[in-house]
Length: 517
Image (tube, rainbow, N blue to C red; front, side):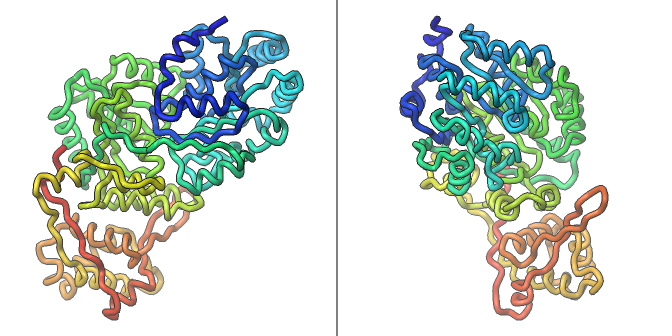
């Protein structure tokens, strides 16, 4: 049986696909780093149909498995999937199929089944001894590494697969991995001698832009609605990512009130409701999906014209993966981030327990705060690549091309006043919330009258943010039974600033022209 090979082979023409397919067909372990929409799935699907036998696919999300299984079955390709939600009778039937010499080509599972289901592993052992386990694909392999975005503890245990089945080639795939994460993946999966294929993370058709986020939620919504209406037709679809489920529900309702076909998607919704929203959005019945990051992996809709982040992501890796769901058809699409420093404080409280969070959050904060550095180059450098040519496809380069120059203000005196305000903070506290720090700074006539003259609260926030970027202030946290709260406190470098030993760098302000698409 051909099982739709003719349908799949005609698609195998993207960078590195042929090399990856050949390498895994020759029995070599492979680590593949491809951008979102680069065709990773085909790199194990096509070899499975060519070589026969059974390919085990480990994937982190049930929604991703569901989409892959439906796609393969629509091509007439035999496939089964097993998860924590699979009924016992279906599991029994699936095991019987695995035992028999059937035409099953793929078994999709979550990592938990590999790690925890002894019966499943015994079935794989039987297939291995019979020579029928021909390949293991680890999708979203960055989940292995504690240094990667979306770390999953059970992914870190997948090295057992190479230990148990040493002759079976492993194909690990990811769209978002730094050099450190790539090495971690190799070590964890025990494929240190693997072939490594890396496609450029640059997506020339994506326009990267950051907008100053208003302080009031209603102003953010109004700005977003005006931007969408000013740039898109009602038939153009997009995604808006929110930080919380409450925000996504509220924003979706606001968009609907303004006549937009918007729907909400988050993990607390019933599975059937989530599937309905996904299907309606994919079919074009819903224009805008307002979602948490629960909506994303495995999206296969090519004509997403914009992805808006209502709040800051927790890392460049997460932002690149989420924003990269735009423009998979190769046509121009916009990736827009609303940013203000207060969102970084909220994000810090959410990720402060994760290893390496300071470096990851710091990188996305620097990306968002950039005023004259090409955003495309910032992304390329983050992933260890040479800066890509932008061709005015980010707001910073578009601004430079228009002749506009970002206004620059020296903020050394203002920064010193903030540092003094923190130094004089009550001894019992020695840390402050952002709002408390701004209020106390503004309330001090001696420190604010001349230095802060003409500054808005947004300007105050930018000065404090710049001090965090440059190491004069750091995050601190307070813990209760119900929440983690973010605070700010001075660093040793801040005391040097007070002594006049160090100067705070120039602060770049956004021009009004930067606020346009």
